[in-house]
Image (cartoon, rainbow, N blue to C red; front, side):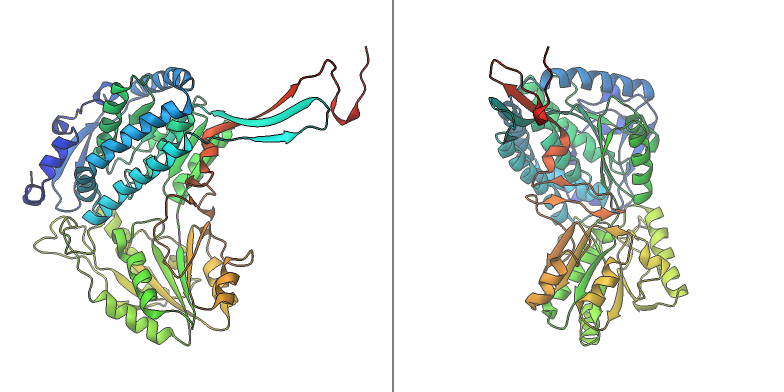
Length: 517
């Protein structure tokens, strides 16, 4: 155990989460299906080995899918409120273990401890939402054109749901899917990121204890581990009617094609290239807070991270000066230390992509306003710590059009009215999150209109980063079009059925058709 891990209680957190045997490649409640190669998890915080897990083999996967399918057939017969009660108890365990799980998220992924706690809180919030939802999986009653008939629609459990999540939110995104899928009556198979396997095992351990106490059928919550080849087992499997995948656009296109080839359903949450429009009527203080947190939070590794700041020429210099000045106050270091704002990138490959982006923007004619670079020396031994950078750039630059998963913010200027800013904001292939900073009602309403932001999320006077559980989360264009979490996102985990009941002694046909025998 490293010095940082000892100082900040990582060992105790692992024990609390049932991961005390993790270093020999096994773990309580999950080792029964893991028989493949060893995957080692190193912390980007200090480069230390946290633990090891085993990858899922093809034979292991067959056991998982068979068990999940059998479990689903029983689980779907439980009433939705009964399933909701199990989720409520799972939620109680999350509340009890919020601190150790948040600490593990921070140490294994590299986000700040407060963000780690916040991610677990998202799990708690979606479970609260799901418990309430378990008593209102409603359909509609419609009037039939045929006398003596009643017509309505209802929703049934879909089956086995495959979940592919990314390293940047190693537990929250899984819970957005699985909490809803569980109350809907589905079984879930989760392929967490191979970059953060221990947080996945920890969540599975928590669920396993609760499920055992409630005699939940085996297979309702399964975990598979490994690289993209493990994910392909699910995406190509027609026994998995829905694949919910979070990750890069490149990955999403591969998943979408594989699932579509078998006429399955896809829920895709892919890349973002999110912008904040700053108008002359913006509150500059709030703009700076929203832009800086949006750009550097989670070291720029959120799909909703702010990548572009589109500022009106009348306030451009003022905004630029304020944001550059704010960057001087950013503290970079061990994310478990709550005095620091920014932790490391996930690994050295991410560092290379970050450096390449800064080189590319200069090559294309941009100007660096806040120098980037890799930090070295005491406290930065992992080689994953970088300086958040700012560059003046043009929207058409190839690097600006591309999502760089790192703390690089591009500043650009617009003139004219908000329509000109919207052309820049919408002028990328991604369509996840967007924001406008303005106190002008007309500008705000134009931004939110059908002619305004083309993103799935459009905010006024808050940043692009983050989202509340109550609203559906997702984006358009190459972001994939999926929706998770709140609102009516639950419907994707169920199959819709239209029912008509004839309570007469005759059999009238629709559209007045006559068929006499």
